[in-house]
Length: 286
Length: 343
View 1 (cartoon, rainbow over the protein chains, first blue to last red):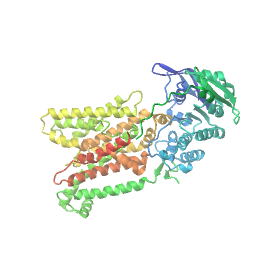
View 2: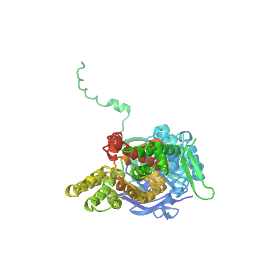
View 3: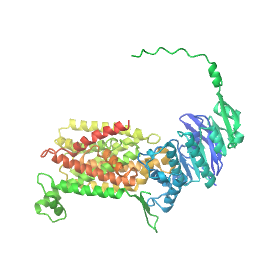
View 4: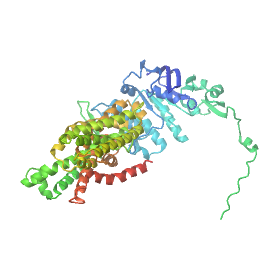
């Protein structure tokens, strides 16, 4: 099992540190979700884990070796990253895109081995994209497109898969579909998955391990059932909430109440608000 | 059903895949190129019927035909085709590494730099032979291209910055060229003017030969790096995540594009818009994967210059319109259309 961990990881954009001496071990073979407010450093952490950012201090180790010292191609054979809202050139078909996932496995004259072909076909099958394989990416719906990107990452055949907000811009059904797909990959193939998620409830439901970040540090981590409490949500997200148990999954379910400083409003409260001022008289219709 | 055919060697780790769209397209373009060449070789002040053109090419023509076709017109047609091929491949590479559909040798300052280098030699060393233009243009192209890359590189060369800097460098090179031309009394200014518009007028074997080594290196190198181009054409983060040594590959490919573009400029001056249009047309034909796109763009570019030269020679005969004017007449509206579409 691959071990991915950070030690004293410090990343800064200019003078402002985004991650501040962060030490974290990603549990192998499990799903880890990184959560926190906008700007808490969760995407930065994911990008640093994938060697896309050079840390100012500390490093990321993959099985004991610093990934910034390893040949980047070798890292790419073991660790895949799907950035947020990736873009592809116009007219590229799904199959062509997925085949690009084989890039780190190819050589100067070995562009399309049998292993490459098998990996692409099986990635297309696993994501249910076989029927759409020869369609251009720009002709697909958001959910299908996201599945195509995941298929590309799968074709890379890495033990570790990092995803930055894989459900953004998707409707509810497609969000569930993508998360179920990732869950199944983890269960069936033992892939280690690390993803940044915006929705705390989705993170609770699909992650084995939750890492809550606040101001570039880890505020809490562990099994969502132990980590997610009203206090933690208040500190990390700055919101009052009530934590219930998800009746379907048995995981914590966070019901937001109100932000710090504003009062909770229910529809009844709204009805008690003073009536709005009368609208300006409309221009005379001719 | 996949559109790919796998080509694999059992004993060696050699394997390729072929998009089934590519061979028929290349064959068709090759056929058109041959037909157009025959037509072009037979057209002029001394017309030669197509049958005679073919016979002469195969070595069976009369002495007059042999002189007209093989000594005068064939090198010109070959220069036209190869110049178009080089510009188109350079354009396809630049569009991929800058991830910008408007990039081309013209936009990145490469052509202007090469033009400046060649004009400087023409004007300041009026006795220099034609073959001196090639290294001068290459030096100018490399300087302008290198400057664009260096100035556009700041914590990783961002695609848009590269193009913006390129436009600036192109303007500066153009201004310098104009200064050189305006301040000199050299008799070759007129010649330089025509040359700057891009023309294959009077090109002979001695103009063709200096191109060949550069294309001989640049074209295979570009084809070998096609799969790196495919990855660079994606996001920066995706390319890095897939294990591409992004800066290194982009630098190499930039160098290849400069080599191809400058060799073309040295042979025929600054032929505008070919490097911009040909890759777009090729993408329509075979899609965006560079293994098929690069050779297709090259063929399309070659055809474009061949056709532009033929049109320029026949449109207002006996007056010759430089091929660069013809490509600009078609290319400028296309550039505006692309700008409009990519607003």
